[in-house]
Image 1 (cartoon, rainbow, N blue to C red):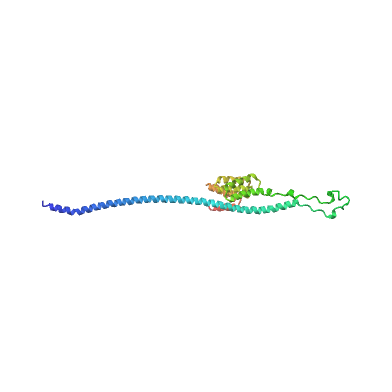
Image 2: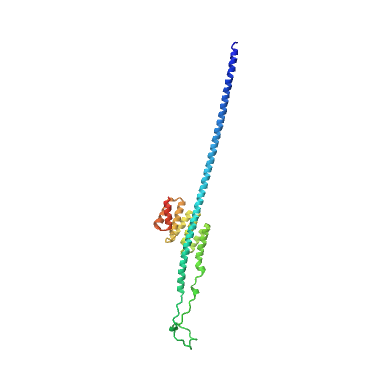
Length: 280
């Protein structure tokens, strides 16, 4: 049994090594567990960040699209207000000129020819002058013409203009639905009015502001068909081009802009058409 102490000594010598081995394995298991936990956390965090980023991007895009739509609407409104002011100035100047011409013509028609000189009249007969009415040959001046017979009342002159101005006020205040109805009724009620083409034009603009682009195109084409010689034709074509662009018809919009330049090269609408084509 001499080797028993040797074996015991050998066992005692290997105990620290075994203990160390067990400690290393436990440490490795813990390290692996920690690493797995970290990886899980990283994956979870990455997924949450991706979801959050996607949400932020989609929300930012939606906000951006809404802002773009609002800007477009504001631009359309500003363009409409500018055109309204320019048109009102033009019409005010035109009405002033027409008023002077009309008044001058009416005064000329109502002028009473002057009486002939007294020396040309025959001598009065004191015996008959009191009882005999004057005749055409007596030299007496004709009876005065009643001015009231040729007078035009304010209601006759202003009814048409008042109706148009009311529709224009609705447009300027942003009440596009009412403006559309009023302008279309005006065009039906006064089809021969000089303001009828403008009424259709503003009706189409109001429909454009309402984003009813197909209706805007139809109304402006009605203007082109009924009043091909109107000064509003280039502006109507420009509104058609804008509506076509909003509907995604880029080719049709381009053709309409080119038509404006070709048929109305000196118009303000043609200048805008050139700018739009240059920017595409």
